[in-house]
Structures are given as C-alpha cells and as structure tokens.
Length: 314
Image (tube, rainbow, N blue to C red):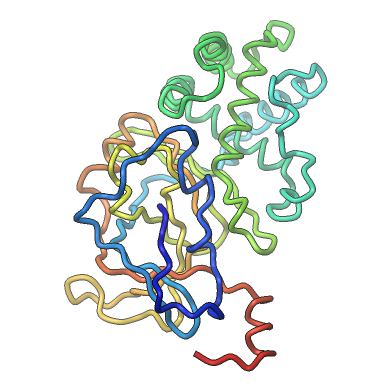
C-alpha cells in the first residue's frame, strides 16, 4: 500500500517506514500490477507530535490454536536432521539466498539456523496439502517442475513418522522443500522494518473450520490485524498481516462505545501463508472490526536524538 505524504507534514518530522514503501508492500511478484485500493476505503495520513501515522480500519484476528513448531519433538528432530542432510548434500537450487549465515539477518532476528529449523517443523505440521496450496497461490519458484516430487516426499515422511530413509530423498524433492522454507522466511520476516534485534519466529494456526495459516511474529503480547482495505483477494500476496501493540497514550472510546486502544505502534508486517479454508475464513465476517485506528511506525532512536539536539519542536 503506497501512502502519499501530505503537504502539511513537516520535512523535519520523524521519518518512518510509512512513507518508505518497499517491494514487500508492493507484492511478492513485482511484475504484477495490483489494483488500487477500493474507492470506499478510508485511509488517511497525519502527523502527531512529530510522528507520522496512518488512520484506517483494522480487522483484528482471533486465532484458534497457535503452534510454534516446538510442540512436537519428533518434528523438530526431523527438521534438524532434514536440514543437516540437505546441507551435507548441497540440496537446494537457491542455497545462495539462504539467510542462515547472513550477518544482518542473524543480527536482527537471532540464530537464523533456529528460524529455518522451526519453519520446517511448522511445514511438516501443516502438511503436504497445505504446502501444495501455498505453492500454487504464491507461485513459488519451480513449483510446476518440482512440487509433485516434494509433495510425495512429504507424504512419505508423514506416513512413516519421519523414518523415510535419507538415501531415498531425491535432490529435486528435498531441494524444493528447502527452497520453499527459504521462500517463507524471506517473504515472511520484516527485514526492512527492524531497527534492533527482535526474534521473530514462525507460528501456524489451525482455524475453526480446519484451515491452516502460517506467518511470523515477534515475542510478547502482540495483536494481529489486517487493514480492511487489503482484505480484497487481489492483495493475497501482500505482507498484509500487521503486528501491532497499543501505544501508552492510545486508550479511549473504542468501537461501539467499548473502551480500548485506538492508537497502535506497528512492530512489523508479515505474509499470511494460507490454504483455501483459512483464506475463506479471513475474508468472512470473523474477527473484530475497529474503525479509524491510528497506526504509527516505530520511533527511530537516532532520529529522536537528532530532533532533541537540534531543539526541534512540533
């Protein structure tokens, strides 16, 4: 979602990601031109005490059972073994893009090897059918060539309790699974919105109707929400999960007179990797709608220091 900076904003105001759109905001495949926001969408921007905010309607999600990829010890063991075998045998066409040894990723998100292991564990738990649907929906690279063999390997691992021998794994199948895990991580982690170390990790959710959705969230008491303007199916590939926390001064009269926060700080955004059932539920009436919520970007301590040193007031 591209936001235009109003003329009223001071050029010396705190700059945030809100006015610095990236390819994460414009879609997973940059060649695809997305439709404009619906004309009925109420999205405005403003400035409060030197901080930019966007005011819009948010749909707060009410997830069912949340799993972190750690609950099943056998899956974690299998994920660790699977990655070790793939590393030894150099499986994966896109290994040069893996973030396991990337200095910036390890600095921002902690141990990236742990991120890959837990993400693969979540993939095993979500199952082969979820993998197939996600590959189709998000046009994962080479899915037309390699998905079927990867699907069959996932089925074999699931039906044998992870005991399918590594000697029977083909480079095509195992490599595609590793590349798929890398795809989820690269697209799901908010790499351009993190200022300091924050250990975002994968979770997957089983919806009330039996669907599955996987995404990435930081630790702590967070609120997952989706801007209602982005609920259109055309935006399914966007990083439209907004992970927010209430601002200390943001409490007031909530929706329908219910007291609650109306000002939020956006910690980061991620993609909702959903199967058909979960996606249908997201677009239904489930969740809590809050209108005219103000969402601020995180304060950059360096910018705040410069503002104080120069004696700027708003």
